[in-house]
Length: 328
Image 1 (cartoon, rainbow, N blue to C red):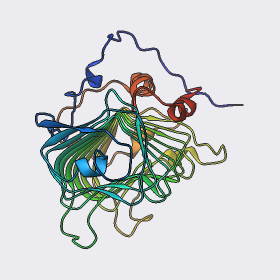
Image 2 (tube, one colour):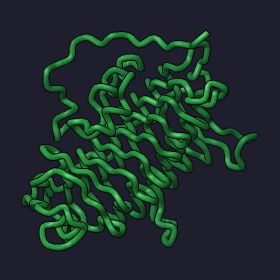
Image 3 (cartoon, rainbow, N blue to C red):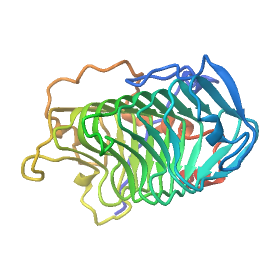
């Protein structure tokens, strides 16, 4: 007998939801980035040179917009090291491919409404002493390694990323969706993890993480996994079935304890999650109360499923994302 998960209808949609407004960021990473700075226009889809995105990113204190839609095929890693920047793909359809985009030890950076596809390594990476970073309404698919990784700079291991928001994004079609390692104060809300084998995400020594109103569906090896002294909240998320019908449903959400990891997971508050029938995801809670975090507006897990499917990702959806979402 095929197992089914019931989804309830949401009522009361407004015509222009608050979470599609550019200023609608929430969680630990809230910043204005370069939104109040001078506007710089990307007029070329070339990897480098006059009018390119790479050229525009050489200085901070700017809001970068695109005058044309299309594909930017990188020849090497695109590094963002300047601060007070916004890379704004609203009103354009821009896809970045060919190499990683790496935010390195920068502060007050926003990337919104951009598509990242088919890097041979990570599609997108945040590392080192980054502070107040927002990744919002982006799509990251078919990466050679991670769709998004947030980690220390391994040459400077004491410099941990902190105060990060990842919201309303699609991470799909990748072996390892997201690694969050040695990171403090991170909000993950209203994201779709779809058709990824593992790391949906994996939290390793992630202090004060807040994971709420996300959708994890058709995972392969496991869904969400928290380990190695990670502390935080897992609240009001929707956990779907594995793409492999033989997989144990319990692997949708794993808190690794002493028996499964050399360093056990820290206190994690788990409540309000919805998963496959007869699986009580909320019984795994190891903390009686939620950690205190900046406000994020939430719905129950069934409502969140509907909102995330309808509004996550870079908009308007391109044919890649439309194909991924078909049938959900």
